[in-house]
Amino acid sequence: MKIAILPGDGIGPEIVAEAVKVLNVLDLPFETESALVGGAAYEAYGHPLPEATLKLAKDADAVLFGAVGDWKYDTLDRPLRPEQAILGLRKNLGLFANFRPAICYEQLTHASSLKPELVAGLDILIIRELTGDIYFGQPRGRRIATDGHFPGSEEAFDTMRYSRPEIERIAHVAFQAARKRSKRVTSVDKANVLETFQFWKDVVTEVGRQYPDVALDHMYVDNAAMQLVKAPKKFDVVVTGNMFGDILSDAAAMLTGSIGMLPSASLNEKNQGLYEPSHGSAPDIAGKGVANPLATILSAAMMLRFSLNQPDAAARIEKAVDQVLSQGLRTPDIYSEGTIRVGTVEMGDAVVKALA
Ligand code: IPM
Ligand code: MG
Image 1: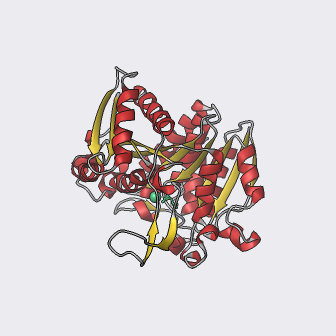
Image 2: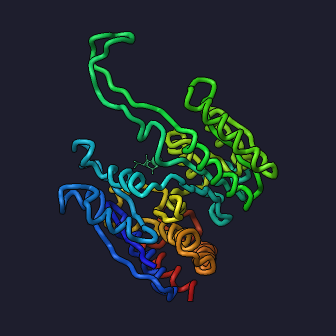
Image 3: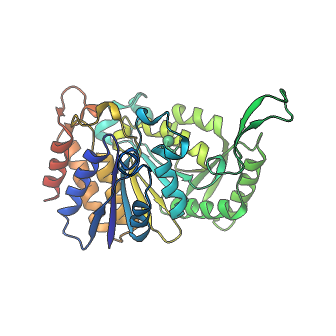
């Protein structure tokens, strides 16, 4: 088994180092190889996703990814910005199925901005389609308008589109995931306004007929955003498109108190996957040794389960994380009075110790 390690920018290298430390004490048969990605790769090679990095990722069984991005690259041409690295990896590896769990740990119930009773025991799985929609739809660009409200003026445009097979395959992923949970799927759309999402709703409904044991309901995205902060525990598996999934998954993540706790997996049809924390590169705290490595450590656990067929090792990591939280250890993002404040490395060390 081969794991490509792509730490990236900002806090990426610090948190990935802790996850690698944890993986290494498990004594499993895998090799790792690291490469630069994002702004770090741009600095070294002039491109956020160099050929060699892409090749390493493609040839590996799984990719452990940190984060990319820094405000200092905001003025670069779009193809050279760090974000293009993650978009390019998703597209080139065909990582269409993005799993974003939002779990509220009992020990962290009070870190949420919502009332504890609304989030205690929260366990939502957002399944976001990741290689289609307005993110990748062509055509896109800038031009001089020939129609609309202001013909002759400059305009910009993107294309929202989904094909039947794209919707079918992500719907199957969602229904199958629901079968392993509480057998409920909420499909989020904007069918009342958008043709693309009326089609989405129709196709998801059709696929749903093959899963009579799973209850399917549909919700408009604006209502879904409201329900997420009003009664989040009503959701179980949520399946949606790339754009809506981007927005809703950040909202769902914050319900749990800290985005620093949430892992994610992005899989292709061969179960090859890219695993990354749900949070970003946080350049403001980079290099200070205070970032929470748990989301990345939990992403490594997802990697062992989904791509490397090591469910026992994955469960051990998850248990160890639970244990360090119970010991009261907290990085600043999840710190509250009466708990023990630790840094990135101490947190990683504590997980390693809990594994032993
Ligand atoms: C995410 C991020 C990315 C996205 C950015 C960095 C391109 O926000 O993974 O949610 O929009 O998909
Ligand atoms: Mg996002």
